[in-house]
Picture 1 (cartoon, one colour):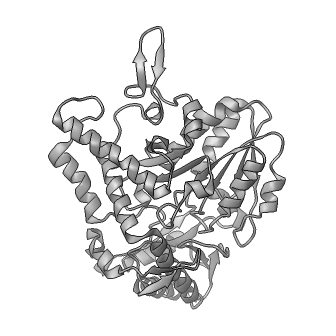
Picture 2 (picture 1 turned 90 degrees about the horizontal axis):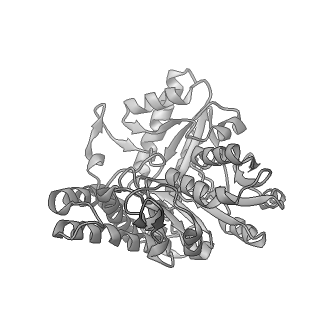
Picture 3 (picture 1 turned 180 degrees about the horizontal axis):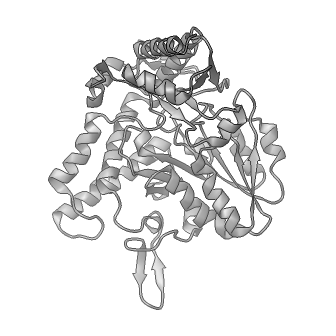
Length: 419
């Protein structure tokens, strides 16, 4: 059986969701005596057995510190760790493994670029361009940088539907703009931003640009060469991998020109009290002992995700989103927040008379796990005049039946609040 990829209209193989679900041990558990319905994938996805085993196998059989040892365990750990750069390269279609930097996650990747690439170029009055829908991780680092340098943060607004206007982006690029940082997919709204066109605007003005792929890389094909972005970042834990591990892709000529952000072991060529010579990228940006088993687990997660076919995953999650949107229309007093024409599998909503935290608590009693809060996107909440939203977010292992369970629980919310 095949389905249509909603991005390019091509036929892709439909996911065997029941087989996929068997790969995830946690999906077999119950919560409050009910089967777990896990719809909090925007915060963090669950892990398949192969990822759990990849980390455990490292610790059981060959763990040692990397890059420094001549003994067998160190050599095996180093080989397994470094092999993951090739897997990330293939996932993102990056030109070279030398452009893949391992970090603790999207947040650290953005901070690294802010301090090492952007900060040296800033003077008082210069501008950094972001959008009003960004995650706090793509706001606060730039605010800190502006406070330290006298630069200014310029924010592009978005429409009631949750969409960016390219005209608004273009009109806010000035002679003082030095850098652009934009999320690929909104974690609060599900909006898929027109990043290809935004990158083209950056090119027209000779600017470098970072794309925050935390909500894109785990859900759709990403090609950094086709996008032509300068930096692309994501976290492993949203891609069925471990926490505390992430990726910074950067064009090599930019990485090579960047000073290290942190100093320590393994990022140097030589050290004396008079002078330190730094290693070439990516080692230059990987000071200290990394999360070795976590990176190896990320490699297993990437293998798993690519075997599913990212285009098929996106088609499946898009079908779940469309079905959920139609079914939520049956829930009295429910309003979806964010109705962009191009959306990923994220559904934020509010209900009359029921706070999102109450909604989340009532759903949890039925074993339905959603997120309730501001989703580290408080400016988005302010834009819509709400303190928080409830958010259901989908992954490859979710089913239409789980959407039905979500909707049934939301009707209970209505009953409890007298609608």
